[in-house]
Image (tube, rainbow, N blue to C red):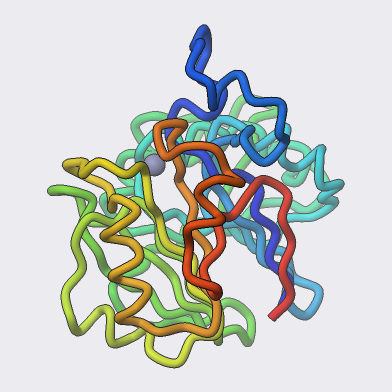
Length: 253
Ligand SMILES: [Zn+2]
């Protein structure tokens, strides 16, 4: 299984437009972060988790030629706004399978009615094949996928475990029985926004405590704000099996 971190930034991305914050002015490519998304390649299939406003750039940068499924963690704009740009994949492949919680699908219906509703379709509009998921393991082809339920302040979000890889973002709290589903993963991806506590995201300290509890071989931190600090400086403070993810990082599991 190959994982590509397509974006590792929080909702505004880094640099923030117009910001003079030192991290936003950094010339280190690892300090430039698009909106959060990850690509999983497995047995010839290409699976995307979240399709945010930087989706088009992310596909072009990584020369992605096909898209077999899109899993959504939740409906916030930084995770969904790129849906229209699945068009080139739709033209080549037909309806693109999407997987999401019923509430997220309802939200997508409102915002992308012309994509999700097949009546009176405008020529050129993409179509999707809709798959509702609940907090229960399911298969994509022969790949078992286990949703992991968590809370983003008061909003439910799904993380996903795919074999020995787990990806969770926008988590603030998680129940012990959901954490239990992550036991034995080799690679855990988890969000940390900044040093200071935040109402809907793990701080770095909370993420490190969660990583210690799950105890994966390696952990990667994503959904990072410029307020966390410079990539290289923060990386130097982390335990030896914990890494700040950065855009276009690839790992093989
Ligand atoms: Zn987010």
